[in-house]
Amino acid sequence: MCEGALRRLAALIVLLLLAGSVWAGEDRRFVVDLPLPPDGRWQQRLDDALGRVLDRILLPEERPRARLSARRYLLSAVPESLPQGEGGARQGMRLRFRRGALLDRLRAQGLHPLDRPPAIALRLELHDPYGAALPQTTALLRRQAEAEAQALGMEISPEEGMPLRLRWRWIDDRWTALTVESDDPGLAGMGGEKRVDLQAPLRTFAERLRRILLRARSVAALRYRQPSAVASPGAGLKEERPEPPERRILLRLLRPATLAEQVGLEQVLSAAPQVEALTPRLLSRREQEYLLVVRGTDWIPDWFAARGMRARPGEGDDEWLVQ
Image: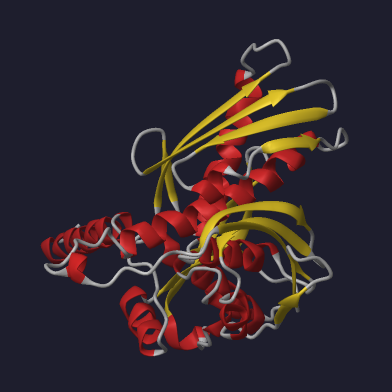
């Protein structure tokens, strides 16, 4: 091989190594792997890919407001062999989107994208009715949690991030009890007993796990975005007004909502200063019910009106209906 060819080869190797180092340090939230579409319609797949990126970098309550063109923010599309099943592979594309341009555009739209992935220090435990650990099923749940975290744009590890501990215990051959240990009241209230679908038991665990991770993502993100404020001088000089007494109410939302929309509303509602505690009682796609401990109820109509909903008192003194 001539000297000129050797120089060109060496330069190519250096470029490949530099490119590899750039990809190695990239934000994986902006990378999406897609299988080749059988109908050749890439535009719809491209829009879906950008939607997955937006799901990762926006909180659920802001996600519906994002309107962007996928082609405008596509950085690269590289053919890739994607894993499929046990040891299998299929042809697809690895899409990378322009991180800085996307974040800047979302901020220009008045949204608040997450600069970095929310971090959760997740501990999982699963025990049989006699208290013995079930390591194989726990490992499956851990892999499920890692897959969900990647889809949600989160980072989970045993040690780093907001602490979250999930302890499942089989009560008998059909029922499990979940204990959620967290300093967030909303997360801690997501435990309880649940009947398991014996035809697909892991799916029952996975659905509950996804719901918890969705809320944990929002909690961790808001803590990073809004650190505890330091009291300013003179803050104690403000005239203090007596707080209304605590009341327990039943809040019924009579409108359809996706899982992400439900978690987003729970997050912002539990963060309202008038809400002392929030516990889900009934959760379905068509209707949701929550038991709330609140200070006064005068604020409820205006709070929901600001979010495009109408709230009114129900039949009982302690019931509110939202549509």
